[in-house]
Each structure stands twice: as C-alpha cells, then as structure tokens.
Image 1 (spheres, one colour):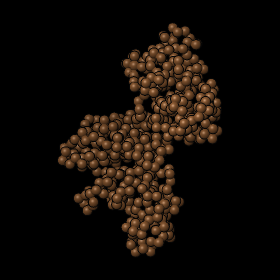
Image 2 (cartoon, one colour):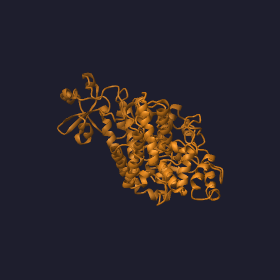
Image 3 (cartoon, helix red, strand yellow):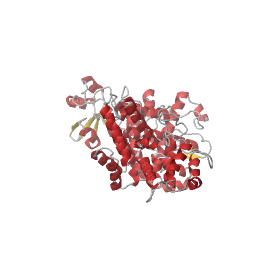
Image 4 (cartoon, rainbow, N blue to C red):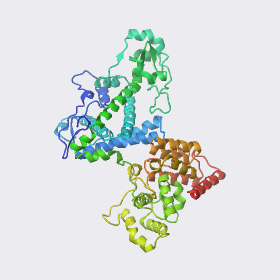
Amino acid sequence: MNVAGTPRIRSGTALRPSFTDGKSSVRSNNRDVDDVAATAALDLSFYAEPPNYELSLDEFEEFALARLKVLRTIEELRTRNVTGIEFRKQLQKAIEENLKPSLTSSSSSSSTMSKHKPKQMAQQAKKKQDIASHFILRAAYCKTEDLRRWFMTQETTLFKYQLEKLAESSSSSSLHHFLLQNDLHFEAITEEEKNKIKPFLLLIPMAGNGSGSQSSTTYNTYNDYKVPSLNEVSTTTYFKIHFSEASDLIAKRQCYVSKGYAYVPMPKLVSIITAKFRIHLSKSLAKASRVFNQVNEEYPPIAPLLQNMNSQYTGKDYNGQDQNGIGGNGTYDLTANNIESFVPSMPLCMMQSHNGLKQDSKLRHHGRLQYGLFLKGAGMNMEESLIFFQQQFTKIMSGEKFQKEYSYNIRHMYGKEGKRTSYSAYNCQKIIMGTPPNTGDHHGCPYKHYDRDHLASVLSKLKIGSAIDRAEILNLKQGRHFNLACQKHFDVMHPNAKSVKAIDLTGVGDHPNAWYRASVAYNAVKNNHGYDGDGKKSSSEEQQQEQGKTEEMKTDA
C-alpha cells in the first residue's frame, strides 16, 4: 500500500494521526530557524514520502474530492486561457474554498491535537489534508497514461504556483527552508565569486520566475525584464547549477552562463525545482501504476473510490430544481414550443441528439437519458418534456404506445416514479466515459466517439467557425483533448464572451448545461441589448447578420 502512496485507512473514526512526512518534515526544536519562514515553507511539499497516519473512509473521499476541485479549476482556467493575475486570483480562491480543513473532524479533534494551540492545529490539519489528498489522487490517477498525464499537468501547475508564492515572499528565507526540508541541494556561490561576475549579473533580470510570458501563471510587481540594481545583486543569493538543469532559463536568457554552469538567483530557482518535481511525480505515478490492481484487491473498502475518482463530477449539479428560466424571470424558459429557437445554443453533443431525434422520431435508451436529462437541467419541466417527446415519437407510433412504453421513463427522470429520485443532467466526463454509441444511436460525445472524417463533416455542415477553427478542433480531438475541443467550439461561436460580465463561463467544456446556459446568456446580451463581445453597441446590420447565421445553422442542422 505504501508503494501506491495512499494513507492507511480505517473504516470507522480515524485514530490518532502522525504529522510526519518523511523528508518534507522539519522540527523547529532541532533547527534554529525563523518561525514565520519555516511555517510558510511547511505549506508546500515535494511529496517525497507517503504520509504516516490513518483516515476514516469519509475523510478519504472528502480530502480527495476537495483537491480534485482545485485541480479541475486549474484545468478550466487553462482551458479558458486565463493567465497572469486573474489566474492566480481564481486559483487562490479555489484553494481557500476547498483546501481549508475543518478542525472538528475526527482526527483533528483527537487528544493529540487538543494539546496544541489553535494556530498549530490549523497548520497541522492543513498539512495533513494537503499531503493525504495528493497521495490519494496519485493512486487514483495512476491507472492509465491519459490519467497520469492529466494529474501530472495539474499538480505541477499547482506546485509551481505555491512555489512562486514562496519565492515572492519578502525574503528568501522561506524558499531556503523549503530547500532544506526537501533535501534539495544547490551550491551557493561565495561573495568572492559573485564579485568576479557581478558585471554580468547586473545584466540579468531577477524579478519573478523569469518566464517573461503572458501565458505564465505568475504575476509580479516588477517587470520580468528589468535588470536588478547593484544593491539587489549584492543582497541576493546566487546558485551555481549545471547548465543542463537550467535549460528553461537559458532559453529565455534569464541567467548568466559560464564554463558549463548557470548562475541563478534564488527567486529563479522556481523553474528548476518545478522541473525536478515533475520528474519525481512522473516516476512515482509509473511506480504506482504497476501495483494499482494489487492495491484494489488488498484494500476493498477504498477500491471503488480509487476506480471511479476520475469520473467524479465536482461542478454545479444541473437537476432542474433551481431552473426558473435562464433570464431569472421566466423569459427564457424552455418549452416544447420554443425549443427550436434554443438549439443553436446547445453544445454539439446535445445538438446531435436533437437532430437525431428529429430525423428518426425516436431516441434509444441512452439517448433518451442523455438528452432528456439535459433538457431537464436546462429548465424544461416534466409536463413540457412529455409534450415534446410525445410530439416527436408519435410521428412513427401511436399516442397509446408512447404513453405505455416511454412516458414512464420521462416521469422517472423527474423523480415521479420508482424510487422518486430526481436525476441530474450528465456532465462531460460521464458522457465521455459512458456507453459508446452504436449505429442508430444519437448519444455520446462527438469529439470522443466520432471519427475524424465524420466530425469534420458535421462541423462543416453546421458552419462552425472557419476552416482554420475547424482544423484546430479536429487536432484537439486527435490529441484526445475532448473538453478543449468543446471549449474551442464555444469560443468560436461566441467571440469575446470572456469580456461580457453578464456571462458565467464556469464549467463550459465540462458540462453541457454550463455550455448551454452561457450560450443563451451570451445571445441574450447580444440580441436584446445590442452589445457586441467588447461591450460596444453593435450595428443593426451586424445583428441581422447574426440572426441570419442562427437561422441558417438551424436549417442545416
């Protein structure tokens, strides 16, 4: 179990925890360190050793889902091309909302915890959740190459963000303590050596992480290309590192290189340490993947959680309970009579289900569930849903047959039959990982389940973007970036949507209903208020062209 890197599990209340973390632990009574700097450094871990404490099953799932929300926030922000200060602001908000453990949990309220001051208790609880959640998700995401790649990308971004915060602190002591705690050894140059190369160091930018890129997740109060002052060079610790470990900095001319060594200031160690973290995590995931099946057999209580963790949905739940119209006043309620006008606002998966229903006058079981629950989540009530499906199905069957064989299924989705459970609309992960469509089926994810030629034909027929846009969508599909392909489709059809304040883009690319609601809101702003994506008044000609495109797309669909 330790090889997979998950904490020990007890099915009841957790026993007394131990807050050691192998190499990443530091005991202040053994080192003469600054308390503030040491505490800040403890917030970040290299995750070199599995944790040595027990969790209840509830904590096991709670910790994992909390971290999963943060990692998916990172993915969503990257998908929406959010960068710089805004990226950090939203990521920090997600961390604060999800990775702040309660001190009233079974393990936090133990006798050991009660002996510590509240601040120490909070620090220990935070450290425990951080390490445990990382190792749980590491075990859950080691199964396949795609899952390992996804986890490694998001975790590395999170690690880099936290390391940057540490490096940007008022002094270098926090980062120095982090290096000590994690046995990361870099050779600091002497004052004599620094003086010899000082003229060159004065020409090298020192602020921030040295990315100098707008795509960087960092933000700085300084310009990344501003050269340091003589005083800054004199008071900064520089490290002598073999050039092969500083390739990223060298490529951007962000360090001084001489005789095979790169001279790197303390703040710029971020990229080097991050690269080491990624290599370490990659090896750990590969090691965990080799024993994944064995762990599931030996620890049956957690096997289902590990097997299904990647398919857990952590976003908004669209079950129709809070849908009072997109506009909030019933103006945009979805009905059997007006559904055609909203089809252009549907994501491709649901548009294809709708078109398939119109073509065949029927949907098979999986198609009825996928599309029926989507309509429910979009605000269509049960009565309107029954009317809509009956109108379509009775083109090839009698009303009596529809009532006998299909109406029960619709009422069941709304919680009016069977166990009376109100079901939620499918999220993208559930659709992608669900039962693939066969010939005659109209469910599934087009980006996942269509071949390249079929998808290209559909995109062209629906006039989605330009040829270049469609090529980019197809390339994302080929790279198995299905969510990104869907996000690209939204961006193409809703230019400058990010600049429209009235639109909530959260979940677009992760849930069909989030895509739909954002699209409806976008079109409402444009059509009802006459604004374009930049917040400027659009001409009547532009509005007429937009309406013409909408009608043309409906006709082609």
